[in-house]
Image 1 (cartoon, rainbow, N blue to C red):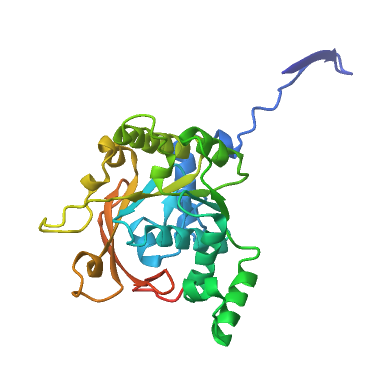
Image 2 (cartoon, one colour; image 1 turned 180 degrees about the horizontal axis):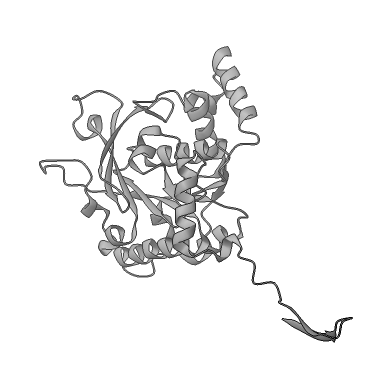
Length: 307
């Protein structure tokens, strides 16, 4: 504070004390619990939470409390050909169109091949027709409209950089304002320098650490080859994700894709898909009904289709 003294005109001595202004309490100075309460109140008023990103599938978002969150590691697993890449790419597309900064890192295709899938998914066109240029007038118009619509609303698409988790970590960190990153599949981060399961476990734990440190949501697909064909329930289980238990321990959300037409050919409804919520650190587990259009590589929400 500041202090001064003097004498009044009538002879009384006075002392002037001017205190310094106290510290200004900024929003970032609020205790963590107070910040959380403010966020809860904002959500109750209809304000979107800044740490939660909707997947674009209403039924999935309902199970996950509105979507996936910053700092979360989400794993999507299933057998080869079940549609893991297609679902992850569709989520990235829907997020980007909703204004969420997303990036899709592919370890199985070139960027051009991924873009072919984008046109097939969003344009509802057969990918073989796109490759061969054999589109009818209606399909050509749909693909063209898709390209225009996604010009300013598509996710970043890159190939997984060589060098394993270290170079992938660098790629995520240098992507400005990134909110959600997809890697397809997590096995692309395994270098093969030592035991596969051990390297996979290291990669899964590193992805979780990266999600927390970088403040992003990370979604990774996981190949689940060699699921026991004769077990009573052929659906993916949490233990099938392997990685020496790292998937069960480190992931916040674990999703499994099950299509009965693949497990038991000739039975079930073609395209009918169960998306199993096998682990949900912040909520309940269960399953969501989706439908898979094989000719378009497109998943639809059975309760909220044609989004």
